[in-house]
Image (cartoon, rainbow, N blue to C red; front, side):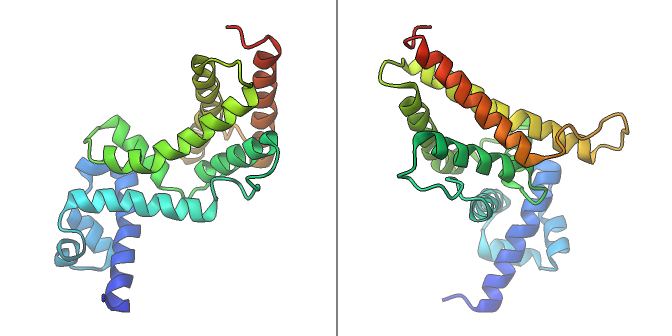
Length: 213
């Protein structure tokens, strides 16, 4: 069994690696920089992870787990609650998770999209596909039994895009030194409420037409 000191060092490496991979992406990040920031020897990376590639994968998984710990996927809403409330909880949690300046997993994934390595495909699929399936099931429930799979997927994509794109722009604006780029969302709670209201209105509009395209 690993000692507490060893586990603490591993935790520190994962935390720092998440920072570096988020800032620089996999290719430009170096084990040397990660170890310097973490006050650890390079041998510690080899001991705990075996390679830079494995550290990259585990850093994303660790960041993702920490994000979900802070913002549970269901938003604290009971699984027995009405579908509208479950959607509200899920979307609000997603928005708050991405908007949190300490969030790393989403932006590590963004760097991976910009300069793909393929190294995160398996770990992200393992974690993210089940989450998406749950959201699709919820949207399907709200649309009703007459909804086509195309409509379910289009609605889910539209809703998630509403959550993600403005928050990404928000964080870019916040970090930018260009004073012309101002934060576009000043109240995250108000924005989350708007997204939920807009999403439910769209779903209800489609459902009210008999789910015809």
